[in-house]
Image (cartoon, rainbow, N blue to C red; front, side, top):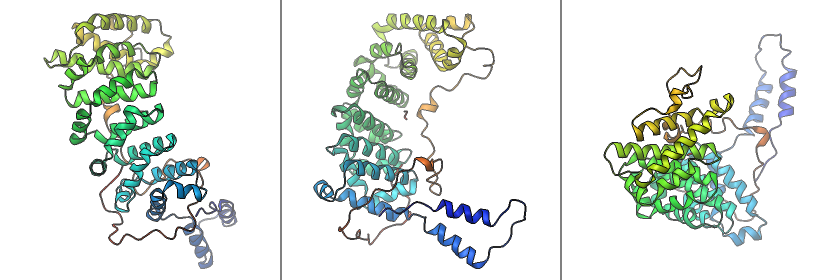
Length: 390
């Protein structure tokens, strides 16, 4: 059950009453110490216990939840809270051991789009940079509903969130990448590029680039499916991040071509040259402020021109490649998009939260009885949980 929030006013008054800002620290009386410890302990949360409670709700049939007055918005709030808990890798791994992973994956098939999307977000957090949880999600057949949502859900937000979860699930995960290939995932990525949704396009382009980096032979699949022509088109997008992501993909294909691998641009070479000339002209007309913001795009355009035509672009001649004050080496335009972020430390899962924006805990069901205790529950075992973007 939800409890009232911390008694911050009381703690503040107590602190002010025992310090005037000038006197040295003094020892607390036993009565004061006891009161303070009780006040703090009353606000602490048993995270594993709370995750068991959320698991109990996820295991409850939807019609029973409705009869108890639990709304889809309440479920979204619970999933929000669960996502905060599983930011810590130990808590993420514990979710499976307490029986919460399978019902979470079941929410990927929920009738409410917002719940499907939120469940995919939680899965993303669980598997990100977590090989053990990647394995557990694959073993629990979590890849299939994610792929289904990515390829065919009528809600573009659900499709985008599912793609984000797939990206985290198969990253540095060879069985996951193999499953993605076998499921015709590249064709689904091609379709997503034509969606017109920039967030969806960015995620797809970033995953394409990662897959090309992992296995250059995928360049033949990408080329045969017509990706170069689509990426050339997206490289002139009004969205800067889409442009940059498209240029990164084209650069990787061009490098594969130079290295004698199967990635190729073929008949799209002329269109690419026209695109690069247009981007150079567009960059030349930018204000100083916009030029600074477009530093990565400038680097990518020059690198791609050099890779395709074996000469520097005219950006160098015009002095637009490295602006005054940019005397450091060119930025790494790849690793920041594909190096998984460090997982939050389990000891500080709430670091960086804004207390003013926290949601109150959603009331759990009444009358269902206590959650069954797992006889062989492992408290903080190392086992299960967690781009791209963005």
